Length: 94
Image (cartoon, rainbow, N blue to C red):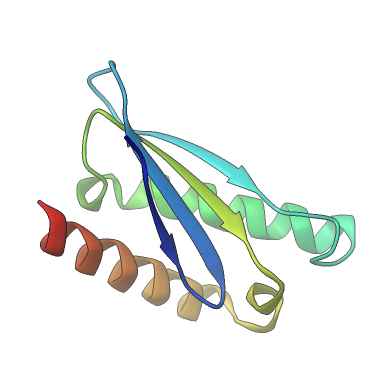
C-alpha cells in the first residue's frame, strides 16, 4: 500500500516495489509555468534524487508531483525542503 506526503510545494507518493533499488517519477503540470520552467524543475528533482539516493529507501517507488508554489523557490531551498520532508517522513514510519 502506498503513502502520500503533502506539502505546499510538492506531493510525494511512495510505494514498495519488487526491485532492489529506489525509482523516481516526476510530474510537473502545465499549470506550473512555461516549458522552460517545467523542464528546469524536472531536472532539479531528478538531480536531487541522483545526489541523495542515501535518503531514499531501497525497494520503493517515489513519485514527486510539483504544486503551484514550487515555481517561487530556488534550487537550494528546494533541496532543503525535499531533504527535510523525506528524512522526517522515513524517521516516523521506518
